[in-house]
Image 1 (cartoon, rainbow, N blue to C red):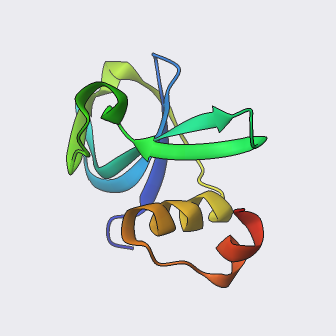
Image 2 (cartoon, rainbow, N blue to C red):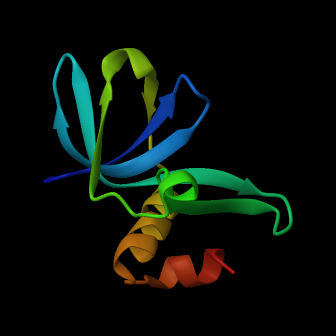
Amino acid sequence: MENPIVMLKLVTGEVVMGKLKEESGETTTLLKPMTLMLDPMQGGVGMIPYDAIYTQEEPEEVTWREGVIMHEMKVHPQFEEAYIKQVTGIETESVKEIIV
């Protein structure tokens, strides 16, 4: 699979999803990274572009040093579909049923 969607837990506590561009022993680069955020008002999880709160921009890619990444997590299919919808606007049937 070219550029699989991965989920990273950072030492800052942030959870970031994106398409894996490159992974070496020293760095990991994600395309279109999104930060997952709890939404207590809706009782779910939302996604915003990584660092958008601070920069007001949507980065095309971000590279992290391996010491900043705690671990890589398995991406649940529903999160993967929601990420694709957020980044591309393409919505699948299962996302319509899950995301309100």
